Length: 209
Ligand code: PRP
Ligand code: URA
Image (cartoon, rainbow, N blue to C red; front, side, top):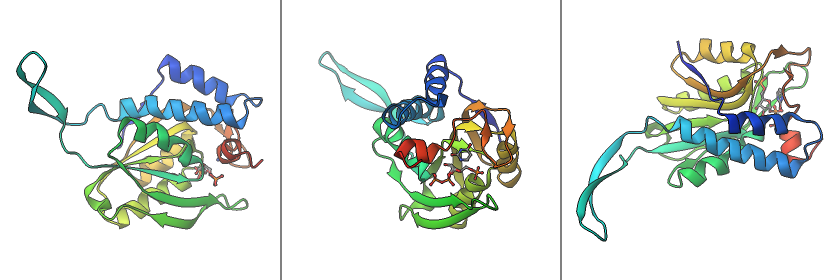
């Protein structure tokens, strides 16, 4: 069974509270999401392997540590996942970005794929799928299936807010994928929206309400 890591640093909780508030406009929503993504990236990359190299400081030669050539990729689920990319690539500039376009059918709530573009060496990379919302889990689970179909073996999922139902779906379909999340909310409503949640993340991010 995969692990669920709740990243509830006080800065993240504070910023998430601001994002949840309905009066928060698109500019602040975007900035807060990007800041939280950066803070989450710091935690998600905690286990990256290091190697020692020889360097020379202004004082002397010494050995010092750098990240050991691990190839990373961040894969936002369009649209709302786009709001988390900047936070990741500002901390890990060498990571490649793949895109998976999915939307939820408003009637069935099932994900519909409309775009997929991944780095050519996707199968060799450790991939971090990002999407602020994990509601029924359908979109995240489908995105992870696409990546596995293309040979990816090392995948993590990073979300902002999740419902217990969605977490259970991803854990059942992908027991090898750890989930990093800032908050686990109470439930889904009849329209499969997270309660209390923050509403429609894509619409709030891009002002399309
Ligand atoms: C939202 C959100 C997730 C998905 C979560 O996207 O960004 O991708 O719903 O719901 P699920 O866990 O039930 O699949 P949406 O389909 O609204 O598309 P958008 O980002 O383009 O608005
Ligand atoms: N998608 C969202 O953007 N919000 C929800 O609460 C559920 C799905």
